[in-house]
Length: 353
Image 1: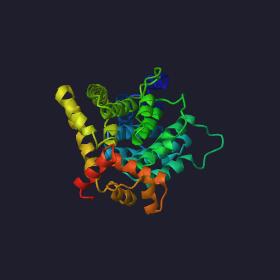
Image 2: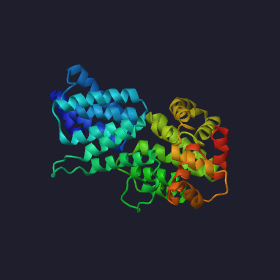
Image 3: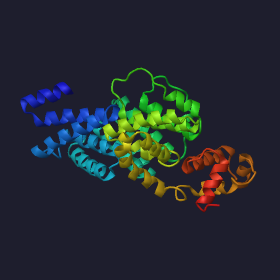
Image 4: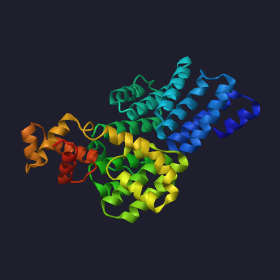
């Protein structure tokens, strides 16, 4: 792609250059540096606008790369605009692989907007009606990550954490499994998944930032304040350099805000980055609490101050023990606590009990 982009530029072939640079940007945002992807996408889009190539098929990759960059930076309005531009260009001359990426980007945008129904539709559409000869394993792996994001958003982390280990998983796959392990409080598994392995071809910067956040939360839950600060400092530093915000929004609530505040006190170099992260995190906090609990979770919550076991609560509600435990884990995650007694205190503070 780099050779094609350079040759096209030397020959003055704008469309070939736009196509190559746009695909380089997609590769970077999916598997490498968000900052590098942003620069490449901006360069391609500038050439698109100057040449009047906005609605050509060659411009689709650049538009979709730009949308993914905006999603990592939690700029949803800009991501929506880039998706519209990519859709319009794609519809002018549809292409199979780009259709898959387009649906994947739409699914991720829907998840960022907490719209699980739309996300599910686009993930299904990305896999449907394919030519039998179309093989896109890298895109299928990328789509499967979005599917896992949807399971976590629906409070079904056990569907991910109970999978058998796969030594071939890359960092983004291990991070999503570590998130699931953290949600079910399997800290040893989450820690093992994030243990550094061999070097990757590309740096996976967005996944590296989220890995650092998860490692900080694990260390904090074990009372390892210095270790938590070390992990979080690396994550914040990388996030500041790359302009990444999404992982902090995902893990907003609970202890993360307090850990970021402590980090600012001991390392003032992080102040500007942490201040830039807070608006998206606070939007999650303000939308959470009472409204963040489902009706069934609120029913389970009413039994937590009692001495009833999970089995007895299940019998009272007419559901399975596993379902009760899943709801309890969701309550703990949303309230940012680790124990039943702490969830009761939190619920009383928020007027739920």
